[in-house]
Every structure is written in structure tokens, then in C-alpha cells.
Amino acid sequence: MARLSGTWTLRCTEKESGWRQGILIAGSNAHDGIHEMTIGDEINGVQGEEMVLTPQAFNPDVGDWVDDLQEERAAWDDAVGMTVTISADDNPPFGDRDFNDLVVLCLPEDPDLQTPHTFPRPDLTIPEGMVSFNSDVDRRHRRHRPVREPDDVRWDRAPEG
Ligand SMILES: [Ca+2]
Ligand SMILES: [Ca+2]
Picture 1 (cartoon, rainbow, N blue to C red):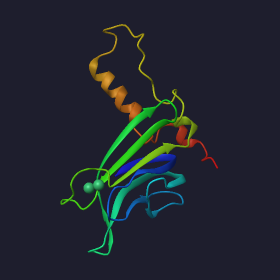
Picture 2 (tube, rainbow, N blue to C red):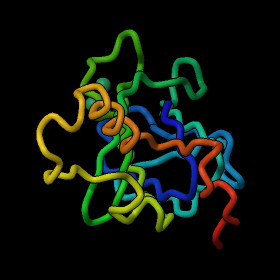
Picture 3 (spheres, rainbow, N blue to C red):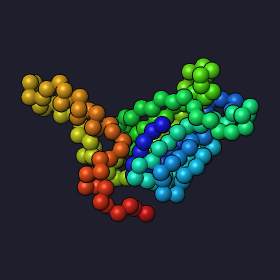
Picture 4 (cartoon, rainbow, N blue to C red):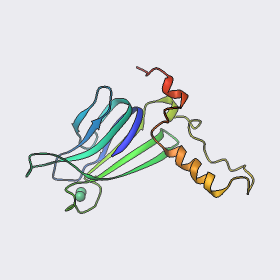
């Protein structure tokens, strides 16, 4: 499951499975529940302070939605900002682990997550030896962390829209 805060667009970029696929949203202001998705589908304005996104597949034998096995990846895209990609393989533990049964790209709608100033970019001007390896790893981790800290002042800002 992916944990997100703020306002996001969810876009299905891959769906290669015989089973129906969807994303289960919890903790949102207005989008909780299962949303069936296929390639090209978009859900806009998914907003919440601590949302949990879980890819699911509709298992026809069970007649219900069941959790997929999933991988997630956070990345910085210079064009759109902070992105999170959820890749799912259905029918665990019997899946083929192709992780393309459902792929959902999460795109930020918050300006804070769209500017290079939100997360420190690598500063190549820092002289060698000034930064220890550990703090470098910490900073990289912080930069990609999709959930904001409660003590972050941005939490106090009123939600947009
Ligand atoms: Ca699969
Ligand atoms: Ca597949």
C-alpha cells in the first residue's frame, strides 16, 4: 500500500490482466472505496491528510475484491514533481510477479510537491567531505518521502479547492 498526503491525481498507465483491477482508497476526504481502473482512467482531486492506497483485483472465484501484491516507487519528475508509482501483481501467492496487472501513477496536484524547492535537490557545489554518507542518505530519503510530517508547517495550510 502507498501512503500519501495532499491532493493527487491517480492515472492508470498499465492494466494487463484478465481480472478487473482497482485501487482501494482509505483515509481520503471524498474518495474512499474501491475504484475500478483500466488504462487511461484518471481520478482527480484525491485528497486527504494520510491516505492509504491499495491495489486490488476482482477475483471471480471468490466474487470479491482482494489485495494485489504490490511494489511502489517514488521519484522526482522535473516536469510534474513528486510522483509515486504503484505496480500490482494479482492473485498472490500464485501470481506471475509481472507487476503489470495494474500500474497506477500518482501525480501531485499540490504546488508544494511540484516545485524543486519542496525537496532539496542534489547540490553539486558542496565540497567533498562536508557531508557524511549517512546524512546524505537521510536527505535522499526525506526528499522522496510522500507523507508529510505532522510538524511540517504546510499541514496548517487550508486545503485548496
Ligand atoms: Ca501478474
Ligand atoms: Ca500481467
